Image (cartoon, rainbow, N blue to C red; front, side, top):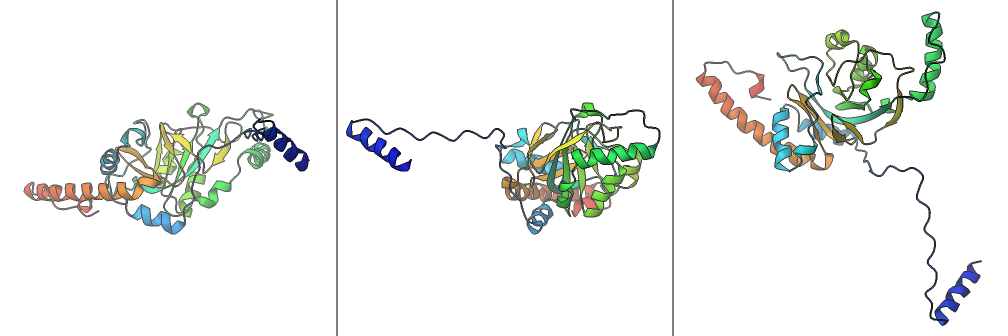
Length: 279
């Protein structure tokens, strides 16, 4: 077959014709067009350290300095579930681990279970098929779980139980386009959550995992796994990993310069220094 093709090409050249072009392989039926990069734990912890103590306003100004502030600041509606004005324990600094949730194309086969045990048995089946936990292995120290979830499902895949398990792994906080439930307990457990609104329903039957560690859109902003997340009462900033070193440098310069002025103003106003001047 190869010989025949060569002869055809040779004949075409003799007759002054261009040889036939090889057929292009068909495009894949489905394809992720945006590539993601995996970073080591050491790389992640090193870059997060450069952002800790910064205010989102410092980061916003630095994002503006590098020309990307219009596409890296989440909607105003994404805000903290709770706030601690004494120690700022609600602040978040970390590397994004992304999770995309979607409404399923099915509903529970029976919405009138006769007991919790009966319902739990069905839930186990649903979880094995549609709620795979592979993402959990990437939830380590200095990570932030960023969840792209449909608010209309009224389910953000986040409650006091699984949120605490993520915190135990070292997760710095949760940012979601939907929300979390068990709000009183999450507040008591001091788990930072930034959300659009609280959600109420249980996962099974209302939500499914579509993918993890792929690009997602939360708060109107594209988030790649590995991007830096900084969040406080002024909102949520997303720092693209490729710009993280430069943004951290500029933001730190802004922060330190501002603190020098604030320290002078504290003295003039007879105020005692606090931890915000030394972060």
